[in-house]
Length: 212
Length: 212
Image 1 (cartoon, chains in turn purple, blue):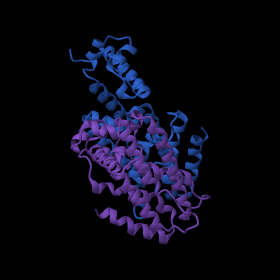
Image 2 (cartoon, one colour):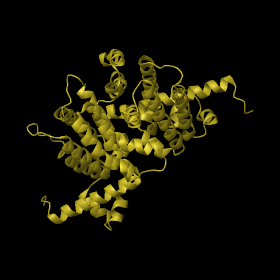
Image 3 (tube, helix red, strand yellow):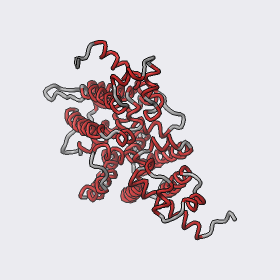
Image 4 (cartoon, one colour):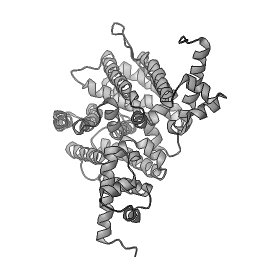
């Protein structure tokens, strides 16, 4: 009975996808589970069968988001990671965050409303800081010359709050193209600490984002 | 009739002070105007006489906050601003933000709930970016070598969201001493671009914050 059939999994995923779309569009507080069921042409009872409460649904979305992010938060110390790979990872992280932007638009409110998210979010932020720090060292930024811990925290603050900042700066609301600037802004933290070759590579990669 | 007597002004300020304390302590969504009146041993009718709605009260608090911040967002181009003065301004800004921390803990939510705040908040953020940029140039950071606009935006993101970040990183809740780290984190953005004397000055000033 507890075995999830492919059919059930598919329904769960469809519910999560639709909830995500609506949360992004209208903000999590303004979307009821009934509205999600409506959007899916599904009975509220059927949705309830998969997710007992809205909190369960939000937590499942956060868990899915964390799995996607976690798969990128792995740096192989043995391997030589170059600046192009680092940039790719950074861009992918920003893409994932854009897909789950409802969480970043209102993180404080969600953490206050759904306390079980607090611990996992705190853990994820600490892991991001740790990976950013490791990444800086791999990119050749010297711990003796730079407070790499502070640099890593600055990178993670910028990544976490760039969407909120963009939205607060602009009364017009969200615009996909402006969001790409986030990755460029992060490179501006790294540039002063990189050698000439890495600086050129970053400038040419980040340029794409500025053309949008 | 419309002339505000000193007595009335005093009552308005007392209401704002108490609202601020309660918002900081419990979060704005959890504080009713009745609770504020209660805390002041004031009738709800008396409070209503000074602020017709909670929205009026929140807007008046934001306006007071903006006046305090604005008085610091002035740079005299004629005058040679040195790094110590820049640091003092930065620290004062962080102090003011700490006093009004309810706004920073939940800025996105407040802007969604009280749309009239959006324009003034966006304007304030743009002014902060502009002053940060001007400040960087006055400190000798060259526009030819550095994207000073991007640096200024990074400074403002960090200042605006440091409290949210600290709270999201730590499930234990707020701690006054950790907040001081925000000013130190900003200096880490500036350090790579400053000359040796300014670097030493910043290191010794920021050190105070790290000892807490």
